[in-house]
Length: 112
Length: 117
Image 1: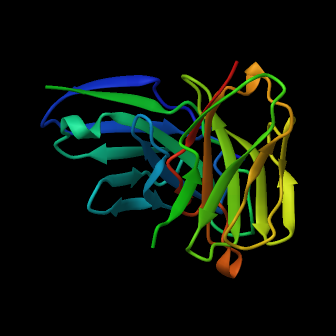
Image 2 (image 1 turned 30 degrees about the horizontal axis):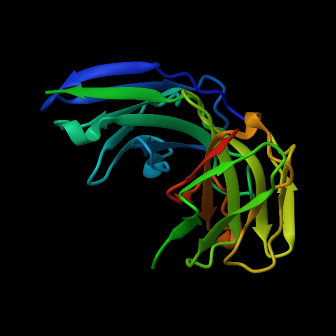
């Protein structure tokens, strides 16, 4: 399975756009890119998933370049409540159960 | 829907005691998994199940047992608790419909914080 690399931590002021980049050089043809958000003392929560180009939902946008070797999670105008750990995962969306690997993620601290 | 529920929320055990962490989901999901999360670390897979009656080991299975007699329930048993099992435990479920993988959306429970003295 593709290994991912993302920054350990980031700080941002309230109201700014935050971009968290994930590197996945060995991504396979049938792999999708998935992001989770984990607030303190809670379980992770699915945010967004994409295969290529751009995906947008009510929470975030996901930008994936043509070579798919990296991806960027974009959070528009963050607030204090966006302080959380963000995990980037890469794996297939079909083919049965996979042993999902969560790395240490990126700890985002939003500053007032 | 209640989603994924876990009980208890907190538990303190003495070394050598046994206990069962409960997990239930009401979404009719085929896949269920148990993870542990230690401070400053990601989640590590303990055991998983792809359906009633089918379980298998994850990354860190030693010291834990699971069973899945129904689609809804997936309890995790600690046989003889050790201080190294102090952690936060998360249960998750996801659909396996049409051969979907667990890299599709997983729904997580609120977690059980376990301390072993």
